[in-house]
Amino acid sequence: MPTLYQVLGVHPSASVEEVRRAYKQKALETHPDKLEPGASVEEKERAEQSFHQVHNAFSILGDTSKRKAYDIQIQLPPSLTFLSWSSTTSSLSDKAKRRMQDRAEWQRQQQILHQTQMAEMRERTKRKREEAKRKAEEETTRAQEQARIVQELVDELFKLTPEWERRRAEVMQRRASRMAGTLGGGANPPSNPLWNTVP
Image (tube, rainbow, N blue to C red; front, side):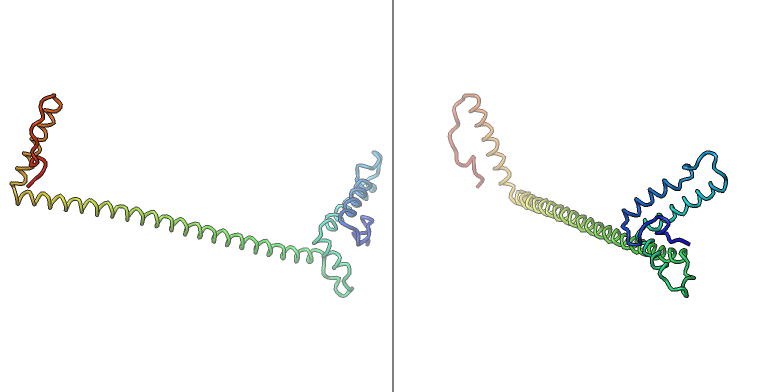
């Protein structure tokens, strides 16, 4: 039984490009459509079989991993020829699947790590905003409370000394009268320092 290299007519050391060129040439030579219209059934079957062998040879030799496994298989001693091609490719397939699964698991873990880091970053930013808002509200509340206390003290002082409130009202009334006289062009009233002060 010819080797796959013999089917394509290439040397075992042939490059991938040489294998590809040999396949194209053999595919053109063995394609069933190349037969004459009056070809017999046997000739058509042989042509289809040859074309199938060429295609199968290229599907293996054109793939680096499959070609490597095939090279190992055809170089095995007779005592180990029970290792079929299917078992070899199955083993390679299992390894490839494990690599893909490991890669997928790594990507999944990286995605989880990224999502966790982003969530922590958002949480820290949220806490900082809330802390800044809380401090601003506390400052506003403290300022309002201080203003309220000052106003209460002032009100309490005026309650304890009604004379202050009376004099303040008089000063405000006189100041208003003076301003009205100035706007009306009248003579300015005599200056009295008591108008602008509260004893």
